[in-house]
Image (cartoon, rainbow over the protein chains, first blue to last red):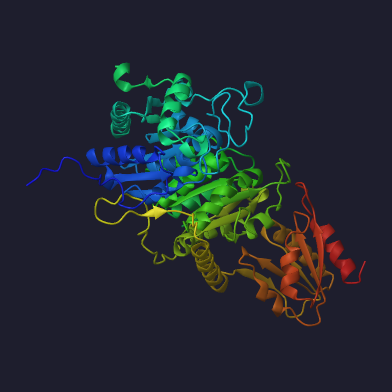
Length: 249
Length: 352
């Protein structure tokens, strides 16, 4: 008998996803699904899907799901968690959803120390609507609404969500990771697990920002997109822990 | 149970708690702030949750989450705040979740004022948010009726899986009246098998959603909603009628305005005029059929509202040209007096 050394996670439903080839949402979904499964959270988990590329996440995670309005996932999660404090509640949001239209909701969920966990996928662009500029778009980056490249004068500098949220007392876990290499994927999974544990221990709000690629709207082949992420996003969005309850001890 | 003297806004809270509501999400706004204040005091005592949100937008989305998780939940606000909630209300209606929303209306448009008004009739009865949806919208005329409708409203929200809106004007929120929280009939309520409470590994995941990318499936969903709204129209219309069989003129008014109209009617009756009243208690579904009971000799309807005549559209639909529809209204927080209403009626009746 051959030993099973790898199998599809029970944390995801066995259906094809709608994500573009080379997009890293698939990897991030898998990590979240694996952590939910390994921590035995699937039976008590309620996930909140955003509006954006991952709008259909409610079809992919193998647990109860609630599809929120654009940016409102942390408010929906708050309502659920306040009713069901023993359940595990997480949001999965992109950068347009979280850093732009939902900026108030994420800041105040953190501010209240809401015992929810957020997986924040930052690809520096609006993917679903066709590649428009996001608050996270880099200076000089060309998008369909910054055709000559984003400028500081016109649109300001990229918004640093982890840096911002780590100034808020109620945010007990804040870490930025990437899924561009196998080593970084392992680190990302550990960060998601640590973040989820913060909720399970009742410590407060937790967020993992995952730097992600958008080959389609960046106009790059998947491999080139990963290199672009390393060359351009990582210097602006440094990886690492911004807030961790272990460090605070 | 004996009657207690209560301020309208606090009576709303007491009624909600009597109905088993344990969750309130809201944001301060005049003239309804006594309600969240009351809930912040009272809900923790019964193991419930009061949460002051960062915005009206967040509050209604917290309601969306809490309702999806199976809770009996409410929010409240006043006109400009209700505008901010429209996005969430549309989602809640689309996802077919129950909840109760109180609008203690003030003058508008824009920031308007803080004095009593009925300016959100269109918003409450025509949707307000995007898409084809309806709310069960009640317009109580006194605090007792408001209490009764709130207690029943929560049940109706569960039965129809639809948001219910209580439309009170600022007067109703601020005035004090004796009320009692009588034993209301317990209804058989459907089990919330759809709620996101965690699968516990025992069932397939539940999904709360309002997205249907396939046009034909979204059309089917719309048809399903229309069927439900038609059922509500058949079963839930509420109206008070007075003297339609021999009235020379029939008033139509709702909320506290209807009470002022009743004072005007007493004055007119003492002068020998025969006047009637149609008071919608549900402004959606609208009591169109009540207008068919007006006697044939009556040729005039006088609509009185604290807005610029938003209900006249519904009255015109209801009378199908049989009567002429007139309007008298005050705006901006100005309250019509019985005398001025009686005078408008006298002129229509050919008197002075």
